[in-house]
Length: 173
Image: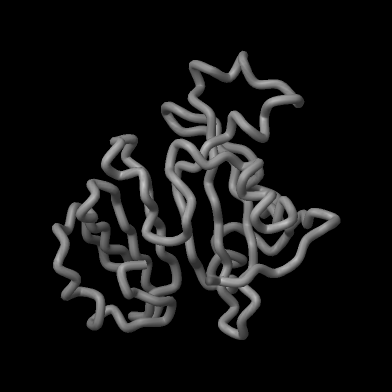
């Protein structure tokens, strides 16, 4: 994302030419040129987690990774592209924010880097009563994208996962 890759040094990314909107010992959050957020999490001064959050503005509809579109690409579109529903961390299947009900679908990249793509899709809480088993795959729209080290995710979200029966690793390109 923006030329940053997992395991890059903290020193190498601190010079991103973007406004810093938050900074903590293990995290830097930047505002991207299209108005979204890019959060980088570090462990041992190496990037282990990158999250690109859509701030719900039309000019920010393009994520920093993938050909998906924030607010338009559905979980159904993602399933179709990757050929499965991926896997879910057992304690991260569904949750809620102040405004949305969200789900976290994970896909391992078919590389030796131990990288996981997480697509966070959701539906506005105000529209939850319009969602049913027949339309949920089209109602859940892309809100954020994470690329993270699998070991780091296992540490923060737990190791228990539920895999789609058609699960397969995906091509990162």
